[in-house]
Image 1 (cartoon, rainbow, N blue to C red):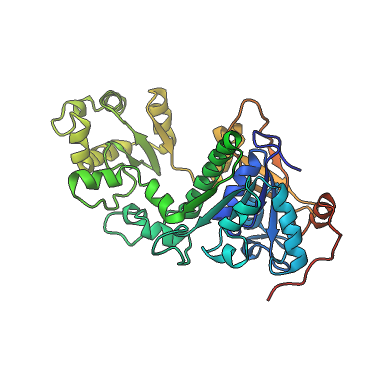
Image 2 (cartoon, one colour):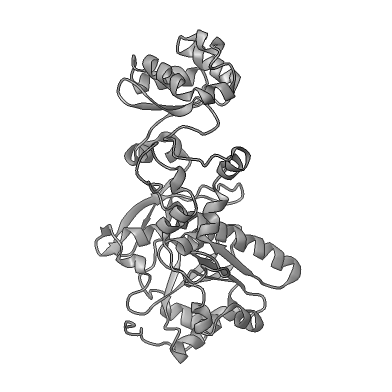
Length: 393
């Protein structure tokens, strides 16, 4: 079942696997596109073998491929290539995340595709993009995080290199690909012609470095890990309380003065070290020490009540169990579930894009079993029904 959404009527052929590409096509499916996942016969997407498992189904795969359809095709087999090309004739978008050159070797490079299917948008997500000296190198999330500079500014001062706790290299690549596809669909509406979307995981990491590049450009100082605090705003950090941590973000002078009053230390606002944000940032360690000395007198929940009453930006440091139970998260339908025909049920993250004209259901169509939709898709294409191919070797 395809969800209704602004992309309803858009057909996406999905050659992607593991994370970056499937994340992109999941976003498109959540927005209403019909996504047909073309998988390797016998084994399918590599993510099907990644745990944890619900029965014999991969929770990893299920969480990234909800609401899609599956057909197994061997793109080196003449009959299966014929089926694939019939799909392309009807498709609006083709998404793949192979290493550059793989599609060309299959005979489906951009030049060939654009000649035969001029309205088709072909989106490629790869480690380093389709051009440049690194283009043909393999990559994974941690490689993108490391080479893209994100790991160099993540973690505690003088700590070991630290990967961001979610696969931000793959996920940002998938998100930028989804944005590029939607832009290309808008352009095609005007021109009638498809185009190629080329997104690199490395490029995506550079794009989200926020002000790190600007800071280096202006100061000549290489940004380093500074823990949970902001490099340019103070106080903007996780602060220890009597029994845990509370995050406080006093992003301007007025909020800082209100914070000082709220914690019973109005004199901090007049301290020469803290009069402006620039001074507070220069003396962030001293200021944090003062704040934590006061916060040590009460529990996290007590401080949250006081700070929230004062309308100061603050929050708890949630673990995943606390996040899933958070009333704001549940109210916003950010934890959804899917159950397949075998009864395998899974909670997963919802869609953060809330649209006034479309529903945001709490239950989603399940991820498909490998080749589950084969016969129905073949019937739509007026192609002869065929048995599943044996696994590729």
